[in-house]
Length: 101
Image (cartoon, rainbow, N blue to C red):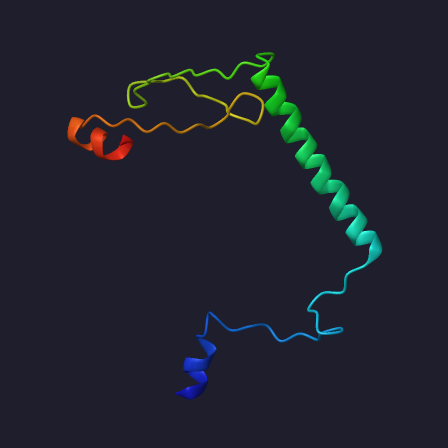
């Protein structure tokens, strides 16, 4: 019974060797690659933010309502023609005052 209960432990910590008290062995090369990748991501974010704030790039909103039960057309979606966005509509006037105030 004890073995069964122990085998069901989803919060167990993996057993691993440590080097100087660290679970990972860090190198100069790994640190350089990490710093370069973080700087690249940050610079790309800042570039995109600047383009949007200078109105060189436009953030658009397009909504299509389609009844998929009656629609016969097949839509092929891939990473060049599909993006996702979220919007929250609040139609209850009592709730609007509580959420936005």
